[in-house]
Image 1 (cartoon, rainbow, N blue to C red):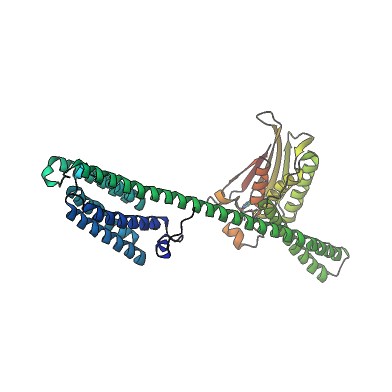
Image 2 (spheres, rainbow, N blue to C red):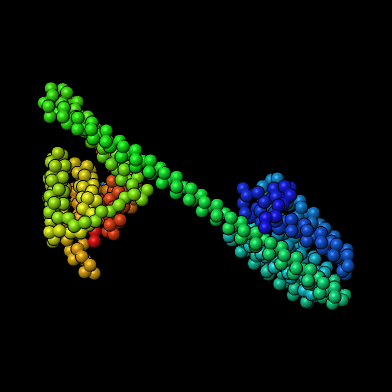
Length: 430
Ligand code: ADP
């Protein structure tokens, strides 16, 4: 059942207000109601006038603080005034004026300590709550040692009535407060969950759009590259062949970029599927060696490949495996100006005898990776300052794709590198 509050009151519980502020407003309202009830109730008790005066003052103060905090936004200041004036001074006076520990006041002491715990934060909360506990304990001891300073109830009926009034009002107020806090927490959790679902859907839609756009763009680029290839092969005049070669280079770069985007979008939208089948290891090795030789040859670097312990055939996703190794080789060539790049493929029996553990290692004598960049190297869009400022083309997506593919295959990737000392990337795939 949903209770509709009048607009004047519901304004104090607007969802955009901080949950503590709403709680303060609730407790201040409860304070006004309780204090006014005590004013009425005290007329039948001993020391009634004094109690009524203090309670009336408390009701006015709670109303004033409610108004001031909501118009000025100075909530912390209002919490502290409440604690100092009402919980320390006001409650001490009420305690001594209305039956001390033979009254409902100890219930209100619990209320004030809980209010402090709800409203204050961190060290301030611990200190004030501890001070309250000590202060209220000392008050009880004071009333016990100097009973002449206490206005005691004249009859047991009065005391019992006050005790019942105390615990009923405190339990109702605290009950409502705690219930509302849980309600608030639950509805905020629901809203967060809703927002999370919307964000995931939006992200998936974006990835899907990116994937289909990249896919669509690939077809015309491939046609343009093929047409360009035709121009080069048709022995065009040197000037035109030069233009075509540059178009070819730019087209390849664009294709690589689109391919990286497509991979990332596929991974993000959960559309990347591994296709596992038996494959011939020799075909994979030959392919990678050819790629390594070609790329290092274009840049005047030397290339070495070493193959150890590989069986004739293996089970796995050879296409993505090739993509991992090819990315690492391309990077090694890209970030090496002089020296060599080496590739090593090793097959070992897995420690739990479940099959062969394939290790791909790509080492270069290039720039290396700085210590600051190393921990973030596998995150998307991470590039060294040097790579970003130099003419080296790249998106910062290659290694993120390599890591994602490796992990999807149940493997792991590691890098050992120091700035200026070359790098070694190691991928282990079961
Ligand atoms: P990209 O090469 O497109 O920038 P990558 O994700 O493949 O993106 O690599 C991220 C960054 O890691 C590169 O920009 C480069 O700074 C660094 N890096 C990758 N491989 C090497 C390497 N073999 N040697 C030195 N730096 C590397």
